[in-house]
Image (cartoon, rainbow, N blue to C red; front, side, top):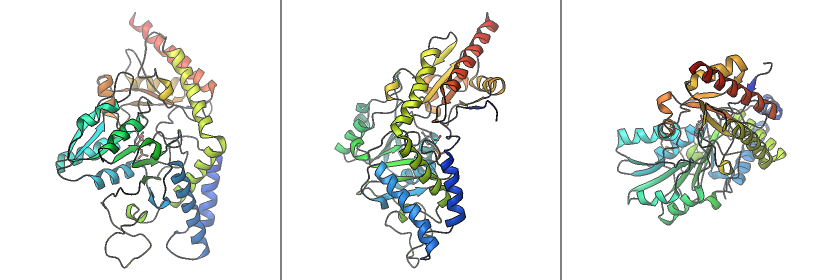
Length: 390
Ligand SMILES: Cc1ncc(COP(=O)(O)O)c(C=O)c1O
């Protein structure tokens, strides 16, 4: 679409690199069979792409065993496997108010229907949780700490290493939701003291929707909460206990894996650090101007040093949804408004009562020109709002 500016990369990255579209097409036309089920050539070649992707992701997370990298449909799927496979009646879990519904809802279901106790650690005014708040909530029955790595609402990167240190000192499994961070910034589970990491393929990894997964450190076991075909050892009556089969059920989304493979390759070629630097330069451009515009309120955009390219704001006097509609209709700018599937963040920010806020999600294909247009648009909307109220 002409002059269309996409600033909704927090929801999903768009467009994808050309190489992602090309490789998915090539893979599905030439190797679109069911890998791991048979030994004919095509099957082996399709399996190689799956194995290579497992290895690339394992390396990215600094895991030791590619078999412990399991593919799922997205991070919601992975997080459900983690939460339901680690917690049962009588257990206690700790999370934060920064979480996405893909963590909040499975936990709430366990609380409501299975008597699992949950504690929620709040974030401070700058958008960060305090690692020292976690051990204060540890109990004998604490079986999981699960924390958002980079917020999909305010963009802050949490002090994962320090939280993990506390968890490991007390022998409590520590999982992170890396939906927004994976593919954007380094994630070294050894350095960060993380036991389980959940990721999705369609955001910063620049792959398609319908593919995601998790890496589970050796020594941590996630119980089966599903069972089904694995393609191997079909005579066994239960679902297999060994990884990756333990957490993979039925035919994989192989075309999704292929797209993810191509997305990761593209990031490696361009340099993950360079892409992040570019996105943060654009985020800073937004912040530097909009922070001084009368009638615009920014949320947790101060510490861009520990931040991803997610920018949250409101135009005073306008509901977020209305600002979004004006941006769309009058300026051709696509963004996301509302609660961003993370209601507790908005409750804490005080934005829940105005039905949320406006989020710009910056991606690798955004340019300074896009951002300048967005800045001018927000300025104009704020000015017309002030004019209306004076
Ligand atoms: C922080 C966070 N967690 C989880 C998810 C869920 O991702 P998916 O929809 O790919 O499962 C999202 C997606 O918006 C997210 O931003």
